Amino acid sequence: MQSFRIDPVVALTWDVADLVNRHLDMMRGQTPSESCHVMTADDLFAAGAHVFALRNGTDTLGIAALKPLDATHGELKSMHTKAEARGLGVAAALLQHILETARALGMTRVSLETGSEEPFAPARRLYERHGFGYCPPFAGYAPDPLSVFMTRTL
Image (spheres, rainbow, N blue to C red):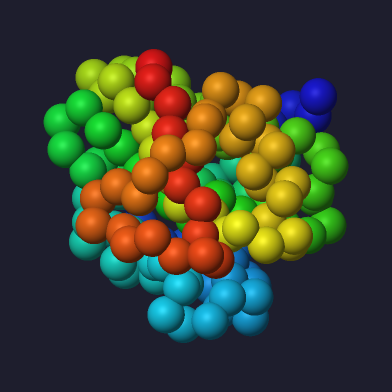
């Protein structure tokens, strides 16, 4: 595995903004607006999300956020790996960090929403490998054929 460093993002920097914008563009390009639940950086920070950036040296390769839903339940948001860094273990490292952060915050469950279509299959496989199982919609989400919902206990 690479020598990654995962840093908390307390203020939006250009490199994190670039990855958030790549994520927004990708999600909005693959999903109709009524089924797209992506959040802007401002929305993530306003929701009290814990945002993290994975770096290799000075290169920011990925981002992920943990949005608190209540004292014991968090939602994984905005998981994104830079296209040129895919296959290096960036997403797995970020996901493990999110789960560790949730435990440290006293959460007992982490859930997520992702796409149901083929472009999202690698993400679903990653989540399955890390113990996530399929569940009904949570936290105000509505059933949607373009969404799948996953959760795991900690």
